[in-house]
Image 1 (tube, helix red, strand yellow):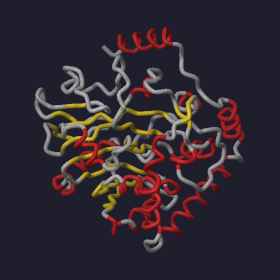
Image 2 (tube, helix red, strand yellow):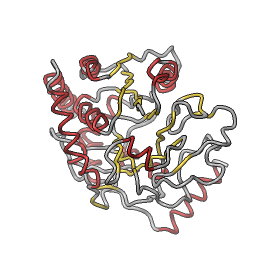
Image 3 (cartoon, helix red, strand yellow):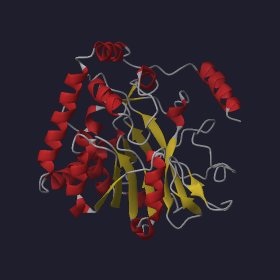
Image 4 (spheres, one colour):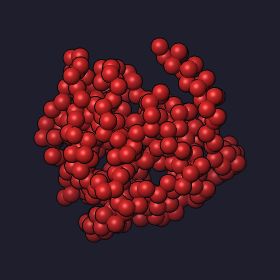
Amino acid sequence: MRVLLVSALRDEGPHLLEWIAHHRALGVGDFLLFSNDCSDGTDAMLDALAPVDVTHMRNRPAPGKSLQWTALKAAWDHPLRKQASHILHIDCDEFVNLRPPLKTLNDLISAAGDPDAIVLPWRLFGHSRRFRLTPGLTTEQFIRAAPPGCDYPVTGRQFKTLFRADGPFRQIGVHRPRLKGSAAGATWVDGSGRPMPDGFATTEHRINLFGMPEASELVQLNHYSVRSAESFMVKRARGLPNRRTKAIDLTYWVERNFNTEEETSIAHLLPATRAELDRLRALPELARLEKDALAWHRGKFAELMRDPAEIQLYGRLLLAAGSMPLPDDAVRELVSHYQASHA
């Protein structure tokens, strides 16, 4: 089984090598990575990673076209997709977290019964009260998260999908693959390896797990969408790598910055990640490029701190130190309203 990881990236230099090392250690065979107008040297890092099966494509959508869908359509047509057994589309702030004794994605696929698709449920990780961007591994620095099965906001119960390249699918999707025909016979399992409810496979627009039990006995997807407050400010300035218009603001922070529980279950994968990271940094130019990227991000933050409006927002991030899960009755009411509005 050969897994292809697809992603769109912009200015991810301080975090890129760890993310690639982590997923190489899990057995990803090929990376097909699209860069969008990088300023911190991420594109140069991707070029330098060619010796370790990283294919870099510069994403240049036509005017008015989606960054993300342009990349995903190009990925579907790429020869690497045709050579892969399985496909995983995730972002650079998402880390696959396998439960012991699983150590590789092949282990996961086998443990789940080799279905057409495996749901990887999100777990939101907050800033762990880290204000500054400092060197170190994301998975070691940010160890506080939302409780399992956090049903509100909606991002707490979203997911990504690991799916068979030869399954009943016609396109890579953002959260789940697009269907080929009705796909009524497609086999989908949850993060515990159990069959998904009837109708889930064919409900293509469904990208949340509302109303379903927590299921992460085999796998969860650690989602570090805020990292430190300083990193968040730079992320806000650059915009999302796959969306031009979505606001990155205090609302975005509050809906993702959960620090209510310590969560270190990914730690058993760290030795393999570190070994891969050492190999990557030994490639020509990569250690220097990573260091330069970190310096660029720090310089960008210093530049932002000369703007009174940015200073005010940064202070508000520090004041909004962590979001709390809502009571069950409030969640049920909000979920009910949400589902009715999307019916």
